[in-house]
Length: 239
Ligand code: DC
Image (cartoon, rainbow, N blue to C red; front, side):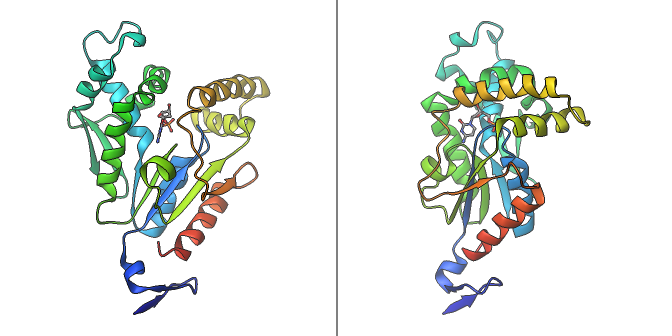
């Protein structure tokens, strides 16, 4: 039994019907999450953002007693304890993070979480906790997942692996346009670029490009163009 895809690719039925994982990794502000969300919508599958889980564990730990001390005093056990209040539930198109059963999106993007999340993401027990949540999302259905190590540590057999990169200056510019809803000045972009380069260094160990990932440099691409490319690649692998 064979199935012919829209792209003309012919797949054995067993492969065509198997749930497909599309893993999209890359550094901070490379547009992974918004691109992944859009790709998932186009393919009619769910999207799961692993970074949101690291942020949720951090946000929940910030709510706990003793959170106001330095984050160096946070133990892995205290973060995992706080993470028990986090759930990851399927929404209309994406898995949504909840803390104590309430949405926490704004809190996840807050300065306190951003300042502490790299430390939390380096804890092996927290990485195992996130990885298990993400694998659960993929059980039995096709999915688009994004993060830093989806194509290496979490889904080494993913049908399609993408690694998105973009020039730090351009990543800084995009992030400011999103945050300020206007064109940023060169000085503002320079300050933000510095921040992005520092975050890249903090997350360097966790950010892994799989040897079989397709590298897409989005510096000169619009978001629609990068989504089109990934959707075409996904269709070719049966997504
Ligand atoms: O993509 P983001 O900024 O929301 O990620 C938040 C933090 O989590 C950042 O420090 C990188 C880390 N992270 C990670 O280590 N591994 C992942 N798979 C996803 C995110």
